Image (cartoon, rainbow, N blue to C red):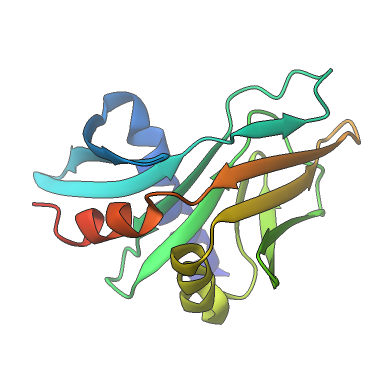
Length: 162
C-alpha cells in the first residue's frame, strides 16, 4: 500500500504542475511540457482527445499524459478526466488490438498492471489511435478518441529533456 501511495503522489505531480509548466515542443497531436521540481527539470508528453462522446454532456478538461517514472524505470501513462470517475470502476483503453485496464482514484487513472506499462507504451508508439472508455460518478459512460500522431517524437523529446 505504501508503494501505491508513493506511486500515486509521484504520478500526480506532473499534472498538478501543468499550470506552471511551459510547452517545450509540439509534434503532431502531442506536446512536451516541462517544469522545475526541486531545481531539476521534469518533462512529460501530453495530448487531449480529438473526440469526446456522448456529445451532449460536459466532459470538462481531459488529458492523457506520459511521464517518466519517479524511480527512473521507464514511462508511466496517466489519464486525467474532467470529472470524478465512478468509484471502483475500471477505465478501458484500446490501441489497435491491444487492450489495457486502468484503475481510478477520483478523476485520474493509471495502468492497473504496472508490468504492462512497457507494452502499453510500445502500443502507443506503434499505433495510430487510442480509445479510452470511462464511467463518471453519475454513471455516464464516456468515450475519448486520441490521435497518436507525434507520440513517439514526444516521448523521445521527454527522454532527452534537460
